[in-house]
Image 1 (cartoon, rainbow, N blue to C red):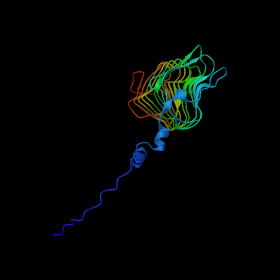
Image 2 (image 1 turned 90 degrees about the horizontal axis):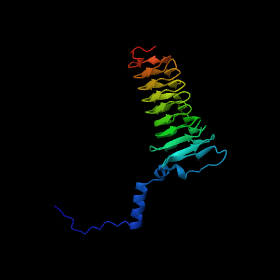
Image 3 (image 1 turned 60 degrees about the horizontal axis):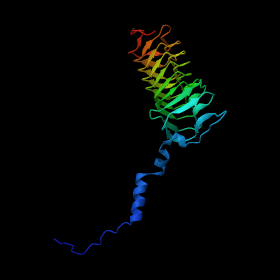
Image 4 (image 1 turned 90 degrees about the vertical axis):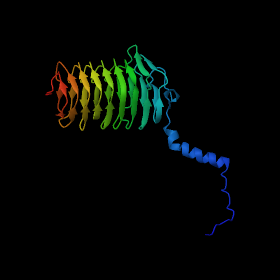
Length: 247
């Protein structure tokens, strides 16, 4: 057996600066940097008489680090003017006082948004308005105008929408795990191509859950002195005014 006893060259060391550059490239890519959320308070702020909103953003990911108070007037809490925006309330609130007439989060027509984990109360123009392919999750909306309004192909889940003027939820897409109680309109109004599962709709002045003829609904609890459900295909597990048979 031949053993190669020749000395081998030691591995060439990587310079400290080069190693740091490699680590930085692996750890934080430019895309990751862009995706990092920042406090909404760092966004461009619009204030004063006739302001459209207290905060207005067009791109990026944000979170709330304190409550936003809208005191009277028609200003919205937050305007979103572009697609692909994410706002995490982190448990904080938008609070309307002195008959605030604006919308909590107004993003009408803007797509692929995420609004989650917070509270909106007393906003007379409505709670959250988003465009298509958006997600509204774990929001608690009360004492204002229409609760959640969305476009097509939205995901609306685990929200509580109570005591509002107008529909609690009005959107199309996946609507699941929500509570929509005591609103002056319908509890849920679902557009075409919707799936409505695991919701509670009670004490609303309009229809408990109003759906298109081909929408499937399952495992919902609907209580109403008027119409419990309209339209839809009963996929089972629903309870209407205590009965397992929903009209």
